[in-house]
Image 1 (cartoon, rainbow, N blue to C red):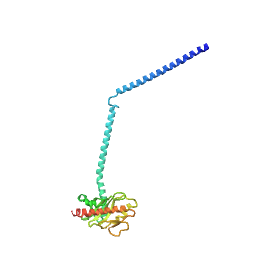
Image 2 (tube, rainbow, N blue to C red):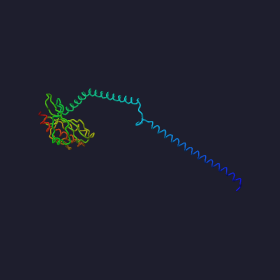
Image 3 (spheres, rainbow, N blue to C red):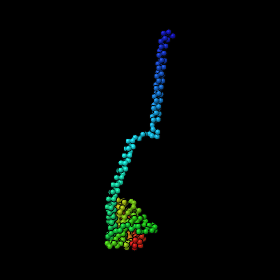
Image 4 (cartoon, helix red, strand yellow):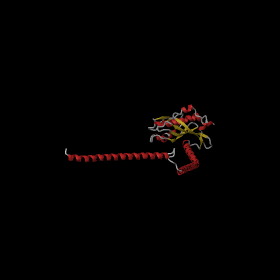
Length: 266
């Protein structure tokens, strides 16, 4: 090996070694600085935690307490005023509403008992319906009963409110006017929700058939009525026809078994 070439290689090797040592030292210093910062942050967090009041995440100020109390009183005042207004409105309107309801009921009663001059309040509290009678109602309930009175206050018959549970679209609520001799003066629907164009034609098709008809029990026919106890069914609405007819029969059973020997003779 040539002497000059060996002399040149030594300085180059020394320079690389020093460079590597310097880089290692810089890396070590960076690690130490990062560790010191991390330790410092942990210390700051620990100090802040130790400075917090025990048992509280946030200190409530006096202003916040005052604001809470003020809002509470505002809500309370609004509630009291609104309740007072509603109470006042109720007191002012309950009599007109009651009078309107009475008039509506009187008009409905008049529709099924044209010969009556006046109608009493409900007499259901004076009527006893036996379990045997209820069992005969066949899918219907008696909801109310009102006396139909003549011009001199004499009893002419009753307006019986029936609810049939056998309608195609749900309950059918209606009035049945019954004279003292058991004649059905007519029926008037209060609530009915049958199929449009079919069962909803009950007032148009069925009501006229019950007017001034006398029978112990009515029955539905689909071939045209041929006797006083037959009711011609609404076309394609036999269920509705039977539900209404069953309700009328329930009113007649109630009249015979709970009224003729009870309220009527008192």
